[in-house]
Image (cartoon, rainbow, N blue to C red; front, side, top):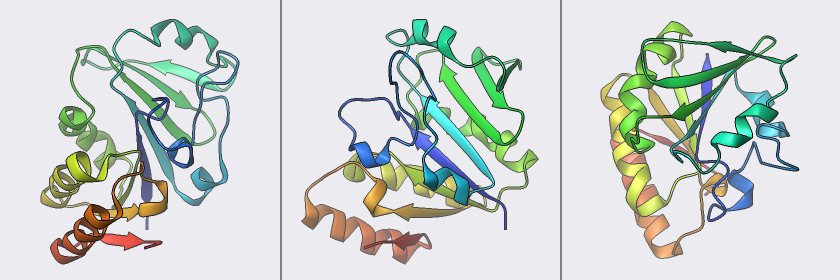
Length: 171
């Protein structure tokens, strides 16, 4: 089964550090690949910060990443050895609003399941999971890799996610 790890806003300071598979360290974006990424066929990073970190793009290691373009006003960086895509919105869409733009990429790499991380449980994970379910992907959520929130709300959300057909692990 092809799987894709999708990390939303991994460099936001407010997100639990466990959700940051890629971090800015010494002005380097995508500087550290954590063990979790090795478990998945593909990794997609989505960042909806529109200008704050634009200058950091110049620190991406050119020998490992190539620049590809498409018709959307978005910059893509793809790893030659593994399908790691960093997607930086340039058109001021939120991360969730960018999901329809992800679908062709997910289909082209024959993804069956998407591992979601870096969300606020109460506001982002439900609509995002439903979006992916409606488009034929199985959302898999590891609650240990989601930003901290009130435990009672997480418990209710986890029950609902399982009810609608998502896989929830580590809870």
